[in-house]
Image (tube, rainbow, N blue to C red):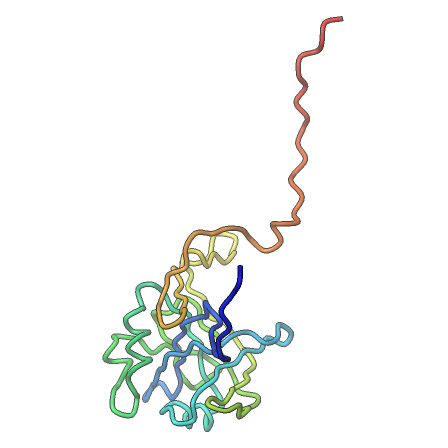
Amino acid sequence: MEKQRWNPGALLAPVPAVLVSCGTMEQPNVLTVAWTGIVCSQPATTYISLRPERYSYPIIQESGEFVINLTTREMVKAVDFCGVRSGRDTDKFAHCGLTPEAAEPLQCPAIGESPVQLLCKVTQVLPLGSHDMFLARIVGVQVAPALLDRQGKLHLDRANLLAYAHGEYFALGEKLGSFGYSVRKKPVGKRRRGPRPNR
């Protein structure tokens, strides 16, 4: 199928729609970020990319820490609000009914309503153009007990996580497979013997 050729653009989708919390427990702040992801597994390293004019930019730059809070279907209105309103003139935690939650060893809060939180310490800031990238080491992960089974295995499908694609929010849908399923061997069972031919 022949494709149209467009100018370069940030059209990678879907991406996470996360709430990034920063500041302190006494003065918490939160903003919505879609430019985030994992850049290394050992050591666990992530990033967020922010415009320097964002209210949260100097807070994170000075403190060197933030929390990436995964979001759910139930949080979608807060996710949108925190992306279009500034902490300069709005207490977004209070407006959205979000709960500041301790995120030790960090001084900044996590968001109590988030089922999974990545606790991050900045290691490097890279100016890229419209955005600066905050590379960060993940120093801890906090997980809601409701996502764990009796053996302690994580079930993210229980969280109803959000995704963002080209200006729209989506809830993750039907599970189609799991990592490595395309090459996994089927268990070998006992062969069923059919009726023996008459001789």
